[in-house]
Length: 321
Image (tube, rainbow, N blue to C red):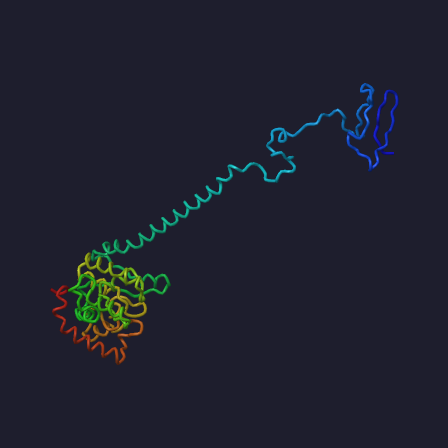
């Protein structure tokens, strides 16, 4: 029988549990009139000693629990007030890395923009034989190329005159850019008309050395200051020498010497007026225009350039004073 143990003076009795309808609170029991003879407290039959005092948790005594039992608090873990700085520190670190990365990219861009101007100075001595960007492309693609550098004095004047009359008749008069022709190109573009070429030999030299092929306003904007710098640093003879030694005259064929040997089987110093004119008119499109096997249209252009070259004495004084 379940119940509670009550100890009197001499006897041990088992007191039955109260019914469900009766109150089990401490006030529902009748205390004896004589407090000295009051029965000792009734405890449940357990293994724990009855005289263990109640111990309140420190949080309840100090009020840190906000008036709640610790078990009733939100499971928020330890105080993370100091952790609020971690996202801030991580964000600052990420921003610092991004700034360093952008600074590095800006430095690289500035170096790439200034490198051609440094190379222009480096290419000033005649003993330096520059290579073009197209030659570097052929090397990168493992195609190779044929180029035999020859000094200006070993290039036939016929080729020099023909190239000038075909590509840049005002070569000796301007300082790298023909602003009259350039203004005409800009006017045609604004009017929506088809633009004609206004590239000078210094501009084409700068493009071949440092830039890429193709029609692009970005490339043209980079080409203009490079052409001015090249014309300022180099002499006209040095500029023409570099141009005739890096110009493309067919797939993998660069320079006047390789072109003369490939198309006509003669050195550049022995080119005739007609051969020089054919090489000159093939420069705008050397892949499709074959100077060694010219078509009817190419022959007609070559005949016109040959006539102009024969009357170019006043235009080449900067090269042959």
